Length: 81
View 1 (tube, rainbow, N blue to C red):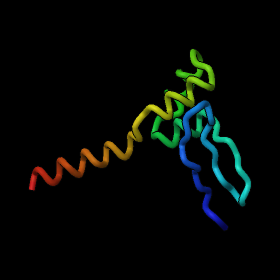
View 2 (cartoon, rainbow, N blue to C red):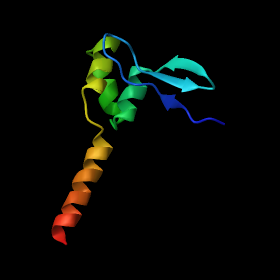
View 3 (cartoon, rainbow, N blue to C red):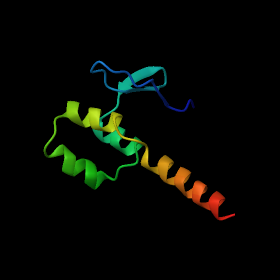
View 4 (spheres, one colour):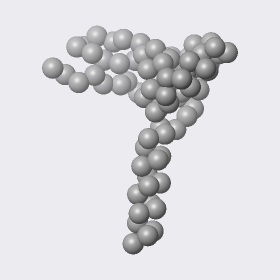
């Protein structure tokens, strides 16, 4: 009944982890990309030419696309009024 919780993103080659029922599970590179708002086709294409280590780094260095989109949309609406 407890919602999964992401641990803090840490550097030093540590993969992000999720806490489910008090057990820690490592997130897959695909899950990290999904959390950042990327579609599966983009991950599949990147996975063809990158190691898992690089895929984690790319997800960690990106911005959360849906969040940035919503912030820009709200700024546009405020500027129109």
